[in-house]
Amino acid sequence: MAYVVGVRFKDVGKVYYFEPNEESFAMGDLVIVETVRGVECGEVALEPKEVSENEIVKPLKKILRKATDADKKKLEENRKKEAEALRVCEQKIEKHGLDMKLVDVDYTLDGSKILFYFTADGRVDFRELVKDLAGVFRTRIELRQIGVRDEAKMLGGLGMCGRPFCCNSFMGDFQPVSIKMAKEQGLSLNPVKISGTCGRLMCCLKYEQEAYEHLLRVTPKVGAIVQTREGKGVVSDVNLLTGMLKVSLDRNPDAAPISVNRHDVTVIKDGKIKIDRAEMEALKGIE
Image 1: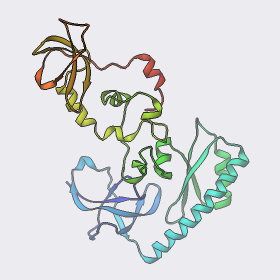
Image 2: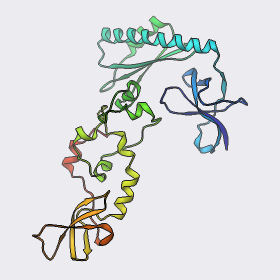
Image 3: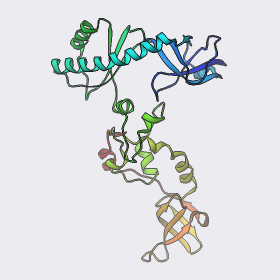
C-alpha cells in the first residue's frame, strides 16, 4: 500500500497521485508539485489516503510544498499571460496558413514552458510556428493536438439536455462508449440524437449501461421463442424498463401480439441484438 494525496490541475481534470511528504493537506489546498511538464500548482482533490501499489504510476513524486501567497500571485499573472499568448498564437497560425484550431493555453507555474492545445483534421507541420512562438515568448514551447472530446471538456458548453457538459462539470476521465450501448438501450441510431455537441457518442450512454446489461440478461430479446400461458410464440417487441413483452402466438400468427410480463414466460430460445452493416457505416466516426 502507498500513502498518497490526489491532486488535479484543472477544475474538472484527472486526479494524479503524489506523496504527501509528511505534511497534512485538506481538500481544496493549493500545492506546488513537479510534473513531467515542469513545476505546477494544483488543487488537492483527494485527502491523504492509502491506495494499492497497482493504482499508482511509479516513481511517485512528492508534493514540494503548499502554495504561498507569492505562488498564488504568480498563478494569477500566468492566467493573464495565457490570454495574451492565445491571441498571439492565433495571429501566428493565420500568418503561417495552418489548418488548425487553437483551443487553450497553459503556462507552467515557473514559466519554463507554454503548452498550446489545438485540434486539426489531420497532421499539421507546425515546426515553423514553434520557432516563431519561441522567438516571441523566449521559453520552451509545446504544441499538443487533442481530440474533439478534449476540446469540449476544455471549452465547456450546454448539452442537448440543457445542462452543462458532463465532461466539463464532474467527469475526471472519459469513459468508453459504443454504438452497442445505444442499441442495447433501445435508442434511435440517428447520429443527431445520440451524439453530443463534440460530434461523438454522448458520455451519458455509459451511466445506465450496467442496469441495461442486467435487464438484457433477464429479459427475452426481440426474436426470442417463448412459452406463455396462451401458447408458444415469438417476441416482437420489448420494453426493458417495464419488463413487458409483445408476443406473436404461433397458433394465431395473424392476430395482434399479446402483452405479457417477462416473469410470466419461459424462454425456449433467446434472440440476439443485431446492428446491420448499413447502420454501422452510417455511424462510423462518432464513437
